Image 1 (cartoon, rainbow, N blue to C red):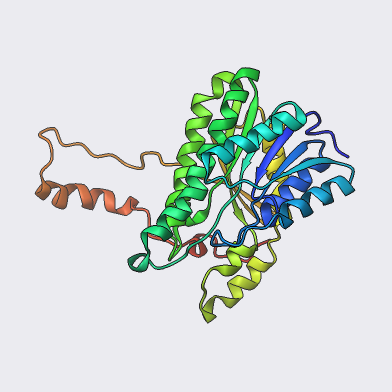
Image 2 (tube, rainbow, N blue to C red; image 1 turned 90 degrees about the vertical axis):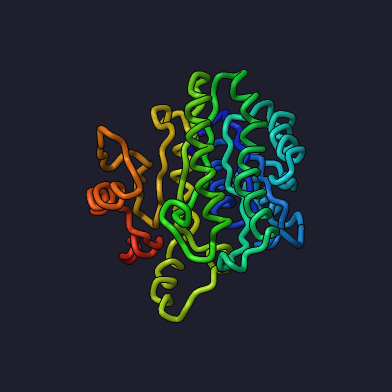
Length: 303
């Protein structure tokens, strides 16, 4: 096995299936001891089973690695603390957190219920906070650690019917940047991955017949393509990488932009609604960011 993550202990949430599973397997293959967290729920957060987490643990051990299963939900603060403590109790410490767990409740906005909103925000955004907050105390004391957080082009660019998911994923961007800033003094890093990969979640998104060609391309994007980036970002080789967002699409890796001023205008006497209409907007309009969907920006066939 590779020794890139030798002597590291990693917690990977949502690691029973899909992207999380591939990350857990590859981290173990590179020497990490892994806490495989997965409550075994459906895409909507129902139907709990310990099967997926146990399967990933079995596969890691069969390949000669070390792993332990955890079945807690990241949406519960006590469970998040428990999974971090499981890493410490089982392997003596924690070095890496991969905030990957997620569910979907896709629906057009005017039909979205409060439960649709709350459940997705709770798992993605609150879950990432709960787990990161529990690990932060350990990272601070040992003055080392790495967070790898999953965002999405649903938030970074846009997708229909995903207001809850998009908001959560953009919240994770802000959380990750704050972790990168606040924890840097303790030699702790935090970065985001925006993955393109065919998974249960992607397969569940409603689509129209005109999207079949695009979906055929997405089916080629297997979750194992995401794992190398997560492993690298978690390793000491990435010690100079902090506060960044990487999109991963098959064999393509993109460094994503982050909000910065595009243009500025000044009016010494101040602004009125009328001068905004007549001066500001005409001056700024050419630099407006189009309201694109993710498929508009990433329009070519994956390579």
